[in-house]
Length: 230
Image 1 (cartoon, helix red, strand yellow):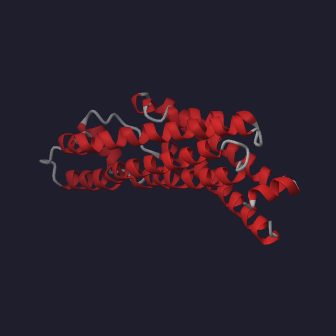
Image 2: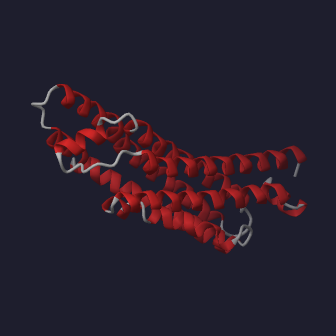
Image 3: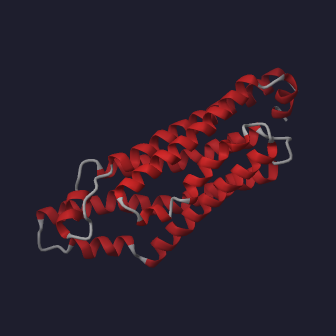
């Protein structure tokens, strides 16, 4: 394989590692900066949804969802030729579709609910809780959101399996990452402290995977580099 092609493959893997590391930061910041009030009450909902950190915190999550599939594409490049190619590409495709299904809901949550809350602050006659529920619990919206999160969990689990079987990266390096995404849906039904802890877990898992991916690109021997260039 031509040296330029091999170096290009290494650069793509490094870029994927950076994407995963950046996603780690995004998913830690999301629950850490999100305002936490009792959103079952009008006062609490108004305090949370109209807060200056509401939009940025949810935007961080959206950026994270976009970055993760890019990292998985680099993972597929890194472990190509190990027998896990099909599993890794399935993980990439599944996660990409999952992210696409999740993002519209997050956009409505971030921008739509914030705009509604600001209007409710200026017009007390508006029923903020009823309007927020219409956005959050629309059947199609909540269904695509749930399916998207399940697909992200499945994609992360497939990536962990591919890493284990490929035996090129540390075998356990995909496990916390997979666990974080498998828990993404159920963590919505837990208190703030658990959700913040989940963000730390997911961030740590992404950072471990990013580090393992970067080290693989840096330390790959000639034989591995040849495979990566295919």
